[in-house]
Length: 147
Ligand code: HEC
Image (cartoon, rainbow, N blue to C red; front, side, top):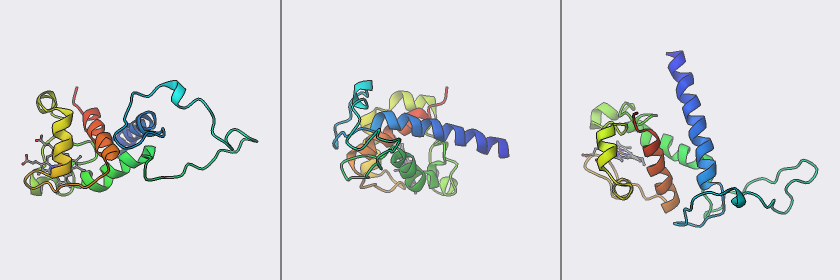
């Protein structure tokens, strides 16, 4: 039991690190580009001086790295479970599907996943989330794909 916990924490961390690359930059809503090293290179004003690191403001047009994970834990894991297997506390009650299922992952498109999140589907409610968060959740669902 304890072991399993540690493992999923490790997975969460790696996902959080992944989303730094995807969402750590000042891209506006809908502007989700491939991350390049140059995106992070120029230090902003106040950064890198005397070892002080400027606090990162959570602006409405910026998706905080941890936000996607938080959004998943808050909005989705109750039904879908931490890793998307449909084993959240409410999973059995609503029959949340196993989102790690390779066959499903293979036939669904990113656009369809985004659509389900935005509009809901049967027992799944619609989520009125900013587009960058939706995109992040789609990626989050993809990282859970069973191998
Ligand atoms: C109240 C429980 C519940 C919550 C909360 C929930 N879901 Fe679902 N989800 C479901 C159920 C039930 C289905 C199956 C819908 C169906 O096919 O009838 C589903 C289906 C899905 C699917 C598969 C759709 C398909 O193509 O068949 C995705 C992707 C998904 N959910 C993602 C999410 C994400 C991301 C969140 C959080 C933003 C979320 N869900 C929150 C219950 C939930």
